[in-house]
Figure 1 (spheres, rainbow, N blue to C red):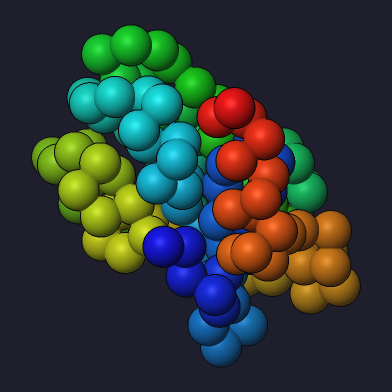
Figure 2: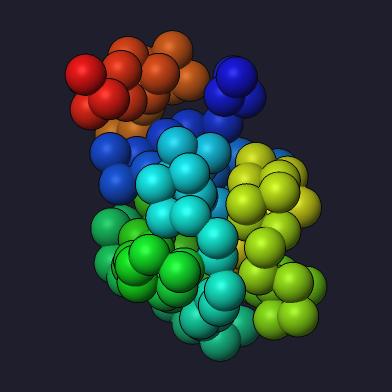
Amino acid sequence: MYPNDYYYTQDHEWVKVENGLGVVGITDFAQKQLGDVVFVELPEVNTQFEFHQVLGVVESVKAVSDIYSPISGEVVEVNQALNDNPELINEDPHGEGWIVKIKIKDETELQRLMSASEYEKYIEGIEE
């Protein structure tokens, strides 16, 4: 269910590395917990983030939740489609519902994150 070429955080963000950029979003588990997403607060392009720093906010009918940066780096692109269609996060959390693209400062930070199988085991523990 969770893409094997992504890395995952305990806070339910994912990052996929493409050509030195980290594409970041929230997991299917996170969007299900939130319910219908109605607003996404995106960071500004060129903003620098450190590992596990708040980079944005997802607001749903149930809750408001911080999005944490799974890696350190600089935002090079934000998903503008979320401004008009925040529900993309619910519809396609690991694809069209991506949130930002970050120029990765230190790829060794990826070692702190979980693989898909580790993440699936992690959320099994939460759901029990």
